[in-house]
Length: 366
Image (cartoon, rainbow, N blue to C red; front, side, top):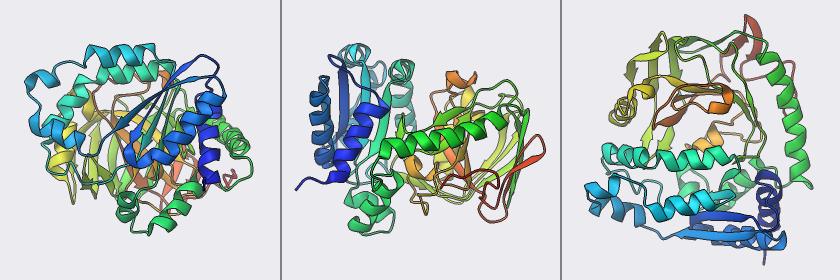
């Protein structure tokens, strides 16, 4: 029996997120576990006249690469793959890991080398600005989130508003309310983040905020920009753990001076944290300030696609900026870390309170 929530999600991804049209070539990538959603997306693309190009990853392929790849394999993205991406009109990527810790033993330097190799490929995708990233619930993700698979499915689909009669209408309405917040933020010069272990200031003068309305991430619910690179000063504590590259990193503390991370520590995963910060010069500067507005995400799950949107949090990404925000920082890294403001936190724009204890007094985000 078809899951109508997947039918809705396929419609959202195809018709709203990437707006696929007749004759357009759309790469659909995902793991084998995402088969039900891949098939729904494939079907919907055919229904609108687009040309789907499925790219399905077999389990264990990443582990095999890191275990057997030679230096030559880290030097350049294969020309065949680059040509495929350059020729595509849009991209839909579906995360569906069978083992969230499969890469836990991999040398972070190897992971960073592969990221550097494929940086140009990422720029191709970002440059076309017609891409969507989503997630299909798997047993591994449910276990990571400390939920049963059935409960995790409800959590995921609820966060995506797939229980709504008209999910696209929901996301369009949310985009309007987020647009009001953006209007206020873009009139400000400075943001201050205050909370337990956190007192950080940064400039957003002249920078553009983007509206995370489901056109790129699903679920979404955020507004974000690229801070002025040399403006960040103070300390920040990221209390929400993240699972990244097969390992958990938690309890991260960063201290900034004139935009640069000058001190860093983590209660867990400090080696990986330092490896990312030392990847290149840009990795020690911020590329993003994001403000989460999705209150349909009731709790953190160690998955950045969800946790960075969690209403009542802010996230800061070390590394690469998004050019459309006016950000100028360049790096092979873009890593989001989440600061929880729901208990004793405050967010200010030019001294005016925007958020207190995770709530927006002047906005209705549902």
